[in-house]
Length: 299
Image 1 (cartoon, rainbow, N blue to C red):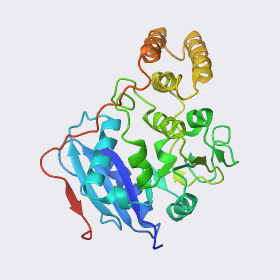
Image 2: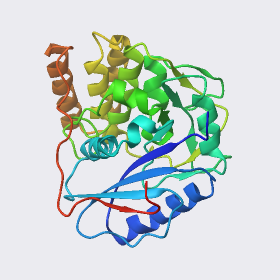
Image 3: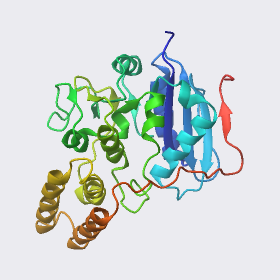
């Protein structure tokens, strides 16, 4: 077997702050010393003037209001159309404010080398500041509870065949969508429910990403919606009950508005009443003009 081939899929916008974040992300990728492709779905007009990258960059322009899950689905589709997904040994979904710790991508390739369909790793602002209450050190197979605790696109890696097996993100979840968050948690729960081999490897923070814990209400709707979606088929009923009680406590101490809490309960009721076997939204088919641009060495 030759060197592992990497495929990274990122959604960002075209503003100057996003350009600075992307520049840092690209620099961290270049330090890995590995080969691969990077699909950038860019929301808004124009294309930021990014520095040269060791990875081949593929840019897909979309309207600014494109949701995060839809953007990720567009990246998956674009990679599949180019034949990149089928060839990828490691697929990652770094946010534009992520960076990779030195040596992390080769280490992740080793973690996936045993045939796992999905590997999750801790992320932290620095390699020395892992929140061990959230990201335990012991390796273990993913369970629904662990998926809710540590599941995040920033630290989620799969081979291309597993992305094809699990499918696209549910576009009801994530930033800019009705449920507002948890598109990544839902993705891990789907992988676990499908019986694929999914493991959490907790020793190192291989991804550098800030913690965002100051806004629990922002993620609450997505959290309970993901649990409700999988309550009948994915074994998350108890977790849902507990999270509903936690939401009432948050509203009671004014860390969340009661209006938002009851909105979440309505979403839970609708998902529990729906067919658990209902199809996900169809894969994204949007292609914007001008045509996606590729930079770097020819494939």
